[in-house]
Amino acid sequence: MSLIQVSNLAVQFSRRKVLKNINLTLEKGSVTAIVGPSGSGKTTLLRTMNLLQLPSEGTVTVAGVTVDAKHISKTDVHKIRNQSTMVFQQFNLFKNMTALENVMSPLIYNKLAGFDEVKSTALGVLRNFGLESIADQYPVTLSGGQSQRVSIARAIVAKPKVVLFDEPTSALDPEMVSDVLTTIAQLAQQHITMVIVTHEIEFARQIADNVIFVENGEILAQGPANQILSTDGTGRIADFVNSLEKRVTIPKTPRANTGVVASRLRLLQSGTN
Ligand SMILES: Nc1ncnc2c1ncn2[C@@H]1O[C@H](COP(=O)(O)OP(=O)(O)OP(=O)(O)O)[C@@H](O)[C@H]1O
Image (tube, rainbow, N blue to C red; front, side, top):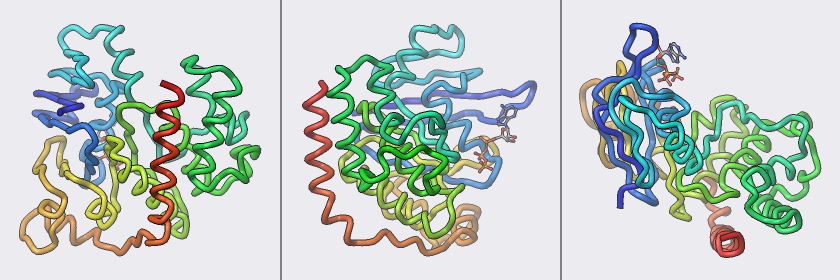
């Protein structure tokens, strides 16, 4: 079942089209990686998927709600934004709130439960991420990796239909990248629909079902990750992939926790719905 559909989309800044002729369909439960050279339009494409960036042509449909560039309805934009959350490069945690309060914030904002239930739900997600011990710390005291994992916890706590990641590891010190990628890989195993802009090619190969390659504002290719990200081919995409090729290992051990994470998420989902 398709969850996101983008048709004939274009985005223009001043007189410059930075995205054009974009057509894509993303299935519910799938993981999609968006890759491509710097400045090609990856982040802009991601931002149009929850209408943080409005299209200048075409349509965006998320979970059955369609926004058409020709007549943008504020109500529909709001509906689509409510279906998705974004994880940013720079974490964007609320600095005046503890880690726990940050994770509680979407549930409180959307009035999804009473205070005690919100608190135990948020604590449960932090526990699943191995972050319970830093629950009462403020963002300034957290490492980059911890901050990004708190921001991922905040992104999933209210069970959005899709989570959009904008280069989630690019602001991290190298030794913290693996922890964050492991957290995202665990979510992928829960079949949470995710779209990830990333330069981590090996990671994309390991967790993505589909890859979209963007260049000069257009989709040059899209398809199964192992096909698009193959190093064997020739041509523009293979050259790009080979230029980024580097090893990112997702540790095997956290997989043992995956069942726990899965059952916790199911509990959370049944508990607050
Ligand atoms: N708000 C804006 N106003 C004007 N131009 C913009 C705006 N946002 C992005 N652009 C331009 O649109 C183009 C695509 O930018 P975008 O950030 O989507 O690329 P990207 O592929 O994500 O790049 P990177 O990998 O470097 O983050 C760039 O040329 C950028 O300068």
